[in-house]
Length: 224
Length: 224
DNA sequence: CCAAAAGTGTTAGTCGTACACCCATGT
DNA sequence: ACATGGGTGTACGACTAACACTTTTGG
Image (cartoon, rainbow over all chains, first blue to last red):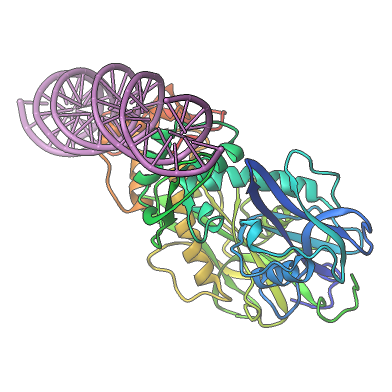
């Protein structure tokens, strides 16, 4: 192929992250306020241009660190966005990843070289975002629901363990439904992907709840 | 962002297709032989550079038509490949799609502007391919297995209908396992995604088998 | 009438769901 | 001792899996 052919020139790759957390039963997503054009002053998902010398996932992790200080997290591909006019300056194809973390484990930078603010916003209170990020986020939420049902994605929200009432509330929050406590516990245990620890922690009641952790091995079984 | 920044220059997007078919119980994939460098004379998945004025999926369909004559088919994203050195001439990020079709419905061009041959090859007899296409194909096969179990992907193999023995053989071929005829039929019907037609066709026996079609509506239910 | 594959029904076991009572702790 | 949420077991219905015989057609 010919590098000089204008059909292929000035293409770039945008890496985009929809990073979620759940806090007190509210599902939130991380957004930043842009310091520079295009879309100066507007909220946006954490995103940026991929460098020539890095892989897509590495580029996204670099952007996340630069713009929010968050690092060492799990992110997984969920879709590609390629509308020709989705970015004003040049043709950028957006490659979008999602993840879910415990926001208390990180110190969120409120201002960086390229951002003037950053925050975790409830997903039902999202403002108008830069680029096609509202559309990307909508798709991310859709895929998030599927992934917590079909995979062990939530292990990344709980790297050091969780209690049953706590994780149940997360499932209920993201999926917008409730579960019977007894059946929820049985089903989650039956997947074989978690195990009991000797620890116990208080959640909402006075009685301490047992702490469970996700086991190493992968699962093929659906959760819900 | 600065268009002239060398960090972002000379990036391109590769669209790549893993197009499958199943014939007499053998799962096959479409590959072409490259007419020009890089990798002249080598077999490869159908792939090419995305133009500036087209979306990813449209670019892939254009490439498929140019290189094989096949058009009007369903393709879905399955992964992104971004190793920095995956393409020799310049930095190309590969965006990979998979599909499955009835090869008898198409006339495969054996030679085109950019290819000197094309063929459907059993997936256990794949030669060394250009670029990172062996790696891409391996991942495609993995995802294909999941998608036929969890979605109605196989509707695209049978746009005008199928018989039970016929589609069972496809599931068995792709998943490398067997199913009980009676239970297979019950399970597939219970998904609600197919319906009987008045037609009947012979498959392997002398007794004609009923023809079923995929219904319009989507499903959330797993198949197997 | 024989061969080859297509079609069907029943049963046992497993899994999902609905539901009620006791337990541990803080105040 | 009481209030709050955490922990457990059982029974019923639905689904999954195992399995054998009858039907249709071509030769």
